[in-house]
Amino acid sequence: MNTIGIFFGTDTGTTRLMAKKMAKVLGDAASKPLNVNRINVDDMLQYDSLILGTPSYGIGDLPGVATGIKSGSWEEFIPQLQGIDLTGKRIALYGLGNQDKYPDRFADSLFKLYEKLSGLGAEIIGNWPTDGYEFEHSMSVIDDKFIGLIIDQNNQALLTEERIKNWLLQIAPALMDNITINSAYDLAGHN
Ligand SMILES: Cc1cc2nc3c(=O)[nH]c(=O)nc-3n(C[C@H](O)[C@H](O)[C@H](O)COP(=O)(O)O)c2cc1C
Image 1 (cartoon, helix red, strand yellow):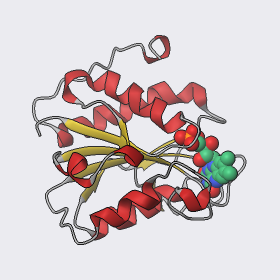
Image 2 (image 1 turned 180 degrees about the horizontal axis):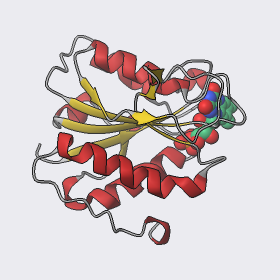
Image 3 (image 1 turned 120 degrees about the horizontal axis):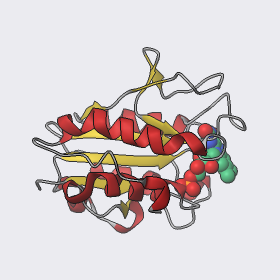
Image 4 (image 1 turned 90 degrees about the horizontal axis):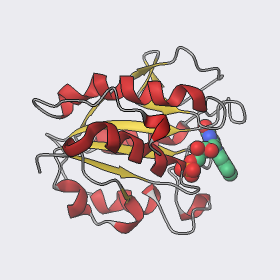
């Protein structure tokens, strides 16, 4: 499909809200964001370009029933990709976490997603600097950069709009040819 697919997992809705903000900035270039607990594999595989988001729950786990998300999440979805070749798919990842409360495992769940998807051949794009975050350790840092956009709505909500816009500006050309980004979009006023 010639648009960008956006999919997320969530428990309390923050990761969904971020997906909606991204979809608004991307406009016609993006699909309607969907929770991975209500799609099947083909819904995702119809896109060559994807933005996938996850909150962090558990201790270095993918969020799902075992980490307390009763309706299921990435942990239940990922096994459906078993044996599927994701070569040719371009995937940008974003992760939610709380750096004050979990400084020793900040946004760790995103790494688990990265590990699974890159292991199946997907090209992961959209790494992000760690400047401006305060934490001790994150599995989601490789070569001094986050493997995707990290958002901390618990402690740095005021930085989120700008981070999302800048990240989308950075990744959009790799996700889609001739894309125009609505970077002037007032995300704060359009929740
Ligand atoms: C029980 C629990 C465990 C959490 N574990 C982590 C963690 O290990 N690392 C982290 O960075 N954030 C952790 N968080 C913070 C969440 O990832 C963060 O609040 C996120 O925004 C929630 O997203 P959601 O509303 O989409 O579920 C945890 C939060 C809760 C309630």
